[in-house]
Length: 235
Image 1 (tube, helix red, strand yellow):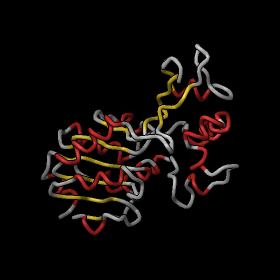
Image 2 (cartoon, rainbow, N blue to C red):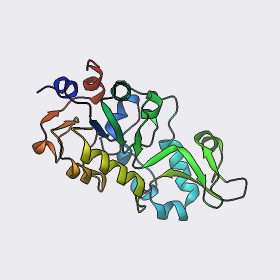
Image 3 (tube, rainbow, N blue to C red):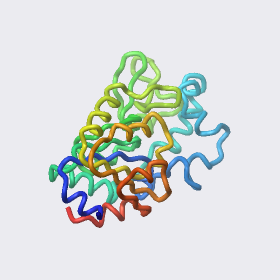
Image 4 (cartoon, rainbow, N blue to C red):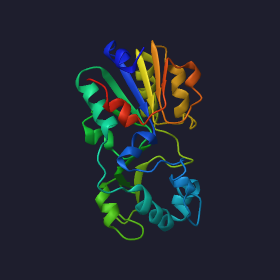
């Protein structure tokens, strides 16, 4: 079966995506040749983006964060737009994303489960007041709240737990889905990669440039850029 046929035949689709969904919008992924993990910093990105580093070297954390994780002028690509259209038509029930860029919502998707949070939201660690991304971007050094507390991005750092509510919702949508489309992710990062085990529906589709551990159990594997693939659908 083709992807078009699978989508045409279902009105209970769930999409689970990773960094590869946003690379066509100009946001680097973490593990490719030119991804963040292969660029040179005083500390490895995995170390910088950890809870311990944030707490102990907050100013260093924010240098990297402003430089690499706050992105300017990016727009949703064909993948984001196609997924929003599928939701609008009542075919797609949820987007579950590992990305923190907010592009799915910018494209018009309403039911987005953000497993790793979002750079667009930030909060004071003392009083809980919310701040937008521009406040962080325009601040110097360690951004602070009016109350004097340190502001933290609403992003799940290494060593931190995923949000229980997000996990519960993701598992529920996947377990009830008729079609699960996985795109732009290597399926190597747990616990998110384990979500695929909850899928009991008819068709598992994987769209990713490189092979994944789940290729053998899927009904359709497409090793092409996801924007091109989803953008070519007739919705």
